[in-house]
Each structure stands twice: as C-alpha cells, then as structure tokens.
Image 1 (cartoon, chains in turn cyan, orange):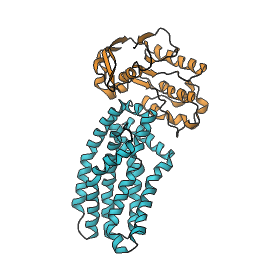
Image 2: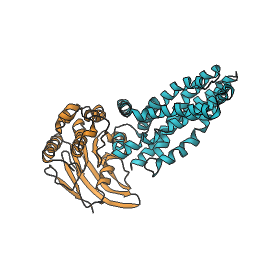
Image 3: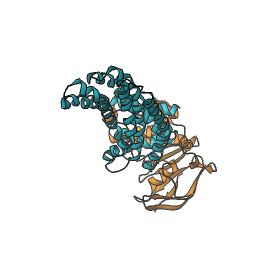
Image 4: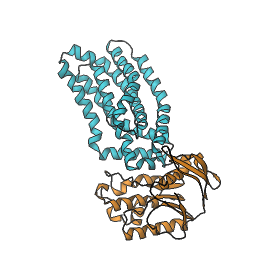
Length: 221
Length: 197
C-alpha cells in the first residue's frame, strides 16, 4: 500500500507542476461544449434536448487528451522501469495511474459538468442523473483510457492510435450515461441505466488494471 | 547469492546471448564487458526482471528469482541507461518516491553524491553530469542487496567518480552485490568480468 500511495502522490505532484497540461483537458471541455450554442443556436428547446449528449461527448474527448502522456512521459525518460521495480505488481501501478488520471481529469470534468448543463439549458430534473452517470462514467473513462494508453505504449504514432482504440470501448458508457440523463429529463427513472454503468465499472475495476499491467510489462521489454 | 544458469535473451527477433552462466557471492562485483549491442543492457534488464529470459534460470539464494517479480524488485536497485529524472520536480522531490520505497533519507543521499546544495533546484537546471549523479543518489536510499548499473559513470567528473566509489565500497562491505555494464574503468576492486560477444 505504501508503494501505491507513493506512486499516486508522485503523479499528483507532477500534475501540479505541469499545471498547463492538467488544466488543458478541463478548458477543452468547457470550450468545446460552449461551441454548440454558437453552432446550433441558443433556442432552449433544441439545446436543452441535446445538452446531455454534448456534455458526455465533450467529457469523453477531454478525458482522452492527457492519456498519451500518462505512460508516455515515463516511458521516454526511463521512469517506467523504476515504477515497475517499485515492488508493486504492474496492475497496481496502472491502477495508481488510472486513479491519478481520474483525480486530475475526471473529477474536474464532473465538477464542471453541472454549471455547463445549466448553461446549456438542460431540464433541471435531469441534472442529478447526469452527474450520477458521470461519476461511474469518468471512472470508467480513466480505467479504459489507462488500459489503452498502456497498450499503445512504444508503438509508433501511438497518440493517433489511442483514440481509435479507446473510443469504441467507451461507446456503451456513452449510451447508458446519456440515456440516464434523458430518462430523468423526461420524468422517468434513470435507475436501470445507472445500475448498468455501475456494473460496467465493477467489471472494469479488476480487468482494466490487469490488462494494462500486462501491456506495461510488454512495453518495458 | 546470485546465480545464472544457461541464460539466453532475445532483443526483438535477434538472439543477443545464450548459455550464460555466472555465480556472484555476497560482496561480489561483476563487470559486464563487450562491444556495443552485445547484450550488456539486456542482461541487466533481465537480472532486474524487466526482460524475460528465453531460456535458463536465475537463482537468488538457490531459489528461482524471477518467479515473484514484485518480490524480486524489492531486492534490487536498477540504474539504467536513462537518468529517469523528472525535469519539473526539484532534485530532492525526484528522490522522494525512491526514499519512501527504500526507507533512506533524501538529504543524506544527495550529500553522498555531492548534490546537497542543489536539493531545491528544479531538475531542468541541472547539467547532464548532475542528473547522472541524481540518478546514482537513488542507490544511497535503498538497503536492497543487488545493484544493477548500466554505464553508471558516463559523464561524471573525477570527484564524482570518487564519491561513487565510496558508495560502492560501503555497499559491498555490507555484503551487497554489484553488477555493472561499462566501457569506462569503474572505482571497484576485486571484480569478476563477464565478456559478452
């Protein structure tokens, strides 16, 4: 456990030092979502109807931004070897990395989603369901993203490959996340959609770090 | 303590070495020699458990060392070809992870490699030789018995090589093992040499 928190602490300290990279994803999220009212027009009925979709797609793309540096920076400067020799299994290292990614990217996206939803005139009764979906959703994005980042590590043009690998995997998350918010906006219960998201998280929590850990060992070789 | 039996390793599709045997007692030092591309770094990474052997086995006190990789990792310190220094952190912060894992004190480790005055300087301000010394300072933080060093003295000045020699001598006096790949003479006495072709 010491090693896990030591690595997590190191990741957070590094994110703090590279503040521009850390804020980049959040600013991208806010800017990209703000483009929609300009492109579609400010009519509340249209905008409110598609607001959950806008927020989810923008969150998905924003979470992808820092992924290619997640392991890439450590791979290039040799730090990855030291992480692998920290005494923590490779799966534990990738889990620490995924946690760090969620804390510096997923959590700010989650916090920014509510004001953004209000700005996009989303029906008020849908907002709690949107956030309740984004909580497991952003966690899933971090876990799937960390696996994708570990798999493309060492590949030429890995940064281009990464979205192509991760985006298809995240489609179920997107579908049920938006469905939960839509159901709540229409006055129905979002419960089944949220439960499905939680089930996906329960599956990804053990499987993604294992897959990413195996990929990390392969890349180090 | 450390024993290799018939080790072989691939680098991509190419067999870099095969049928490699050696045994290293407590306090021993093994210097890997050979031309570029002869597999010195690959052997060091294999000993660290980062590369899987294609054949043969590695024994630690008579037991298979690579069966439990995280456990094997706690027995060793690896200083690779890259310095693994994060430019955005200060010199002291760069050592913090190794200190928390190894249990040593950062100021002592920095002093051991003559970096005490540079502790709070961002690593991007350090010269290449100073970064190398920072990488070597990790050795002073750990009590692990096996040191794996890839070209440790590359870019070091004479005074730093002497400090490094003190570090090495202390480690061997405590019964520690050193395996180093190098083209430069190292501040080590009574070494064994393994020549790779």
